[in-house]
Image (cartoon, rainbow, N blue to C red; front, side, top):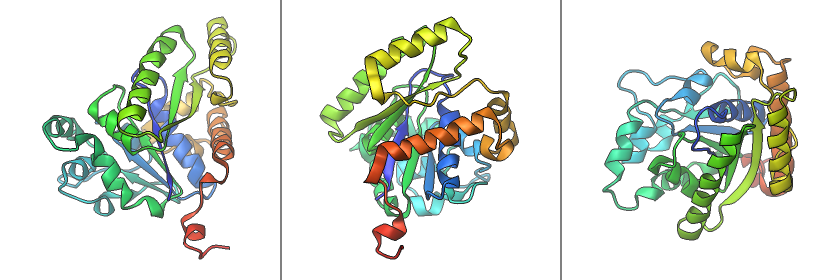
Length: 268
C-alpha cells in the first residue's frame, strides 16, 4: 500500500501548502503515482495543482461526513500521475459536525484505506492548526513531514506540534513516524536563518532534510497560475529544491514504497 505522509505545522505561513503542492508534483514527475489530499478549508492545495470543485460538486467534506466515497471525489491535476482529493470552504463545517460523531478521529483513515493500493505516495496538506482535521490526518498517516521556517517563532511552535504527534502516537496511531523536517523560505544571507538551521540540525540531526527550500519568487508566483512551480518554471531555484527534496524523501523511505504495479506482481 502507498505510504501516507501528513504535511503538518500548526503555525501558518511556513510553506506547508507550497511543500504539499510542489513535493507531490515532484514525486509524480519522477514517475511515482501520487495522491494529494487537501484537508485545509482554504483549499489552496487544490487550486495549486489546477483542480477545482464545481458548484454543488463533492469534496473531501462529503467524504468525511460519509455522504460520498473517495473514488467519486478524486480528480486529476495538471501533473501526470498526480491526483487530488479536493477541498472547499465547506470543510469548516465538517469539523463542527464531526465533534459529536463516533470515531471522529478515524474518518480520514477509514476512507483512505480503500484507495491506498492505487498510489505509491499519499500526501496530506493539513490546516495551520492542531484541530480535529489535523488529528484525522495524523491518525491516517504513516509519517509526518514538518515544514519549518528558519525563524525563532517557528521553533517555539515546533514543540507543540511534536507533543501532539507524541499524543497521537500514544492514543491513536502507534506506528506514526517523523519522516523529517524541512527548512523553508531559507535565506542563507540572513544570520538568524543560519543560526536556526544550526540549532535545528544540532537537536534533530538526520531527521532534518539536507535540502533547504530557498526564498524564491517563482514559488510565490506559481499558485496564482494554478500550477506547481515544476510546470511554471522548471529551472527555477524553487523547482530544483523540491525535486531534490523528492529524491531525498524517496531515499529516506528506501524500499518502503512500492509501485501499485509491482505490489500487484504485474510490474517489471
